[in-house]
Length: 284
Image 1 (spheres, rainbow, N blue to C red):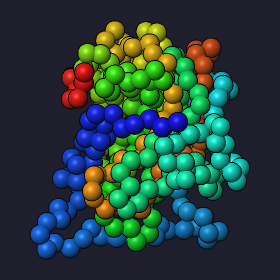
Image 2 (cartoon, one colour; image 1 turned 135 degrees about the vertical axis):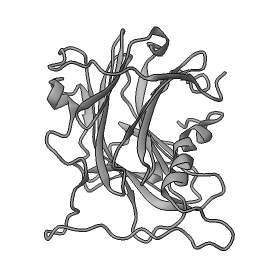
Image 3 (cartoon, rainbow, N blue to C red; image 1 turned 90 degrees about the vertical axis):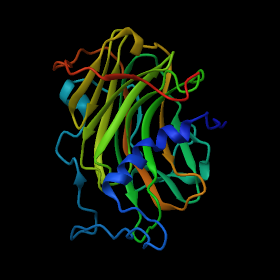
Image 4 (cartoon, one colour; image 1 turned 60 degrees about the vertical axis):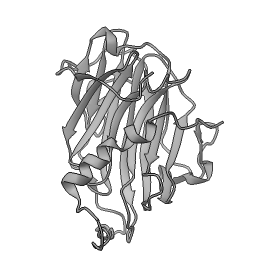
């Protein structure tokens, strides 16, 4: 089963990358040189990669806020990906590699969408994520999104929830929730988003609020009724490239993905600044 690209989705997914490119990367035009190739990452004496990004323990909000045991999830500690649990519109591009769900894209591959077989209206979703641009890769950056997508159709982007969206070397990570009619509640946060940088993003959705978490800290809590759709959502990861453009060879990797119920109360307060309210393009 595949999910066709909705109207305006690529423009939405790539908005952050275009802005980041203006701030963080040289503009290539005319006879200018191509972007600097990605170099190999430093390695430990044992041969493994050094940890880049958020590497403290615990890495997850579930531990800090005491959400209990996951009701669904995957640690990917097997040689073969469970393809009953994980589906994709490009199944040959996803696999379990090195204990991680790995989505591979390169060249003129425009978009790869991968989703889990779990869904719920309310609960807590969390994943530890990184973007790995391969050594020697040249071209434009892919944009990665860790999101929750409505199982019953998105109505031109309505009801989707994005926990995190960014490209390598962006200055900020962004997230949002969108609801009918054209409502958008958005956040952004300055974060180290270099190649291979690990970060953990989580969200808690209840009938009365939505709270976003990054690297064990609550970032935003939104209670306005217009942000609360109450629809059933499934976990989804997306790598999106520019149309007709050569993209860098990129792996989007998830160390683990977990879902927790609301059975246990938070051990710490989720009080935080509300989101920025606006409208979004391409709504119905």
